[in-house]
Amino acid sequence: MNLESGQRLSVEELKKLNQPSVPSLPAMPPDGLTRQDWEDLLSMLSALYRLGRATSDRLERLEASAGPQEALFRDLSRQVGQLPTREQAEALARDVAQIQAQLQQAGKKKEKRSCKWLDRLPDFDLTVVVKWIVLVSFIVAVLLGLGYGTATVISGIRDLLP
Image (cartoon, rainbow, N blue to C red; front, side, top):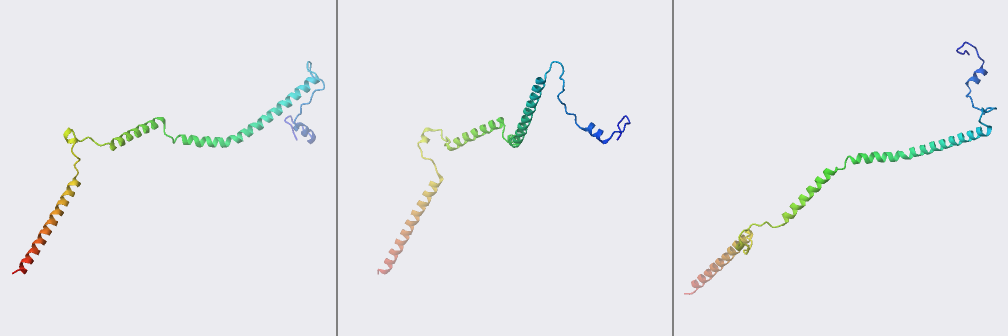
């Protein structure tokens, strides 16, 4: 294998170059940091890593539980568009009140008379007049039938007598 500089390297050397470098604690820490400080720093970094890992796990669980809630929110937002607005609801309430007022007035009798003496008279109904005409006609027909029958009987009796 060749490097950019043109040197040929063996397979072992290439493997060493490709291996990730692991930071190790220096044998001689720089000035101001002791071995204990380095260990404390390493334990803090480990704790920070564990905390970050726990936080990411918790975040993944929250994201997984947010899916159904998100779908529910989408459904609700679609349904909100179908509901009437405040102005439409107020207009509907006014229409209902107007219809109720008209129904109440439809149930009341209308005042037709303006004279006080007409108020004492009974209401005029055409069916009552028709009933009276039929009754009088029936009575006249019965009386005519009785008169004709009586006249026929009397005429028959006269024919029998000499």
